[in-house]
Length: 238
Image 1: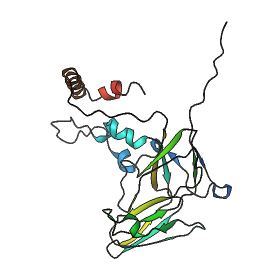
Image 2: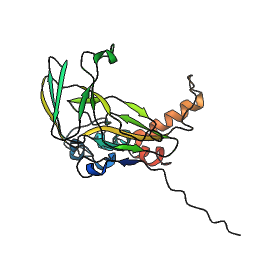
Image 3: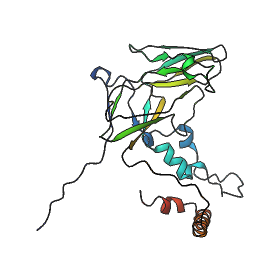
Image 4: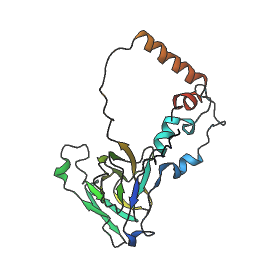
């Protein structure tokens, strides 16, 4: 007797907007589909330089860097915003040309003691609801390996399986005094869904055993001998 196995659909994150916003506000995209311009222009190997330690390899061949850059989704700024930064960063005003609130402000006392507490905490408004399967949450981070000189979003975790509504993103203006235009579609946050159940593991802090020392040294030798070793073996289970 044969048992017919029912295929199980992989978990999916869904981004929802109001019907009138579809095609108007910038849409979320997989992080791997929007590589920064500087990264795309960078050669994998720079043969024009003299290298003694890394044989001319650039960060384009660094898998940990690339994995961070391409993991999850990029939630972009819905519409173009102008930030007016004044008084050594202590005053931030915003303007936009869309019939939605794009930026609001928090009070400084809410982040008292924070290294940036002299800068007013602001908030970008987002018009996408994010829905994940039961047991899944989303980690929201400043876009990884995509720094900008104007603002930095504040990281947070939301249980998007139960809170399927708009999530707005606090940020600090990091630019010097001046008027800045942040274009529609600018990466705002990186969205990384993760399963809550079973993600907790206990910690263990100790000295390594002799066997663990040998294993670590072997990995180091393999990595130094072949720049593709990590890609081929350490990530083989993906």
